[in-house]
Figure: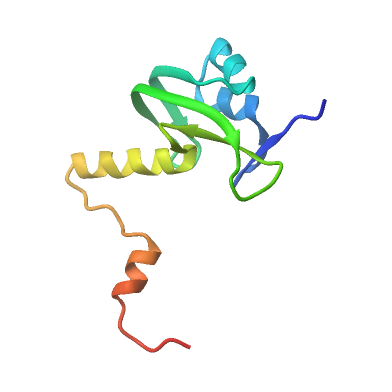
Length: 116
């Protein structure tokens, strides 16, 4: 059986490797690799932000990627793991009084200028 992987900006990781890297326990990883939902609380490591984020009563599940056939992705609380970490980072920044950067799509809409 061929292992399906998740593409990250750090390369392709198997579901198992990604979950282990983020901090899921062995039992949870086993459930996730069988595509079952797991409810968890604790700390997950973000490779993108190189820090841990806390989760309380969150749900994780591995699902088929909606746009890329044959690819899987990890969903946490109904969004992709990368979006979940971005949301957590944004919440943290707001909590400590730092205005988070706007994403490029929002910034682009506010720019004045000529489109080519």
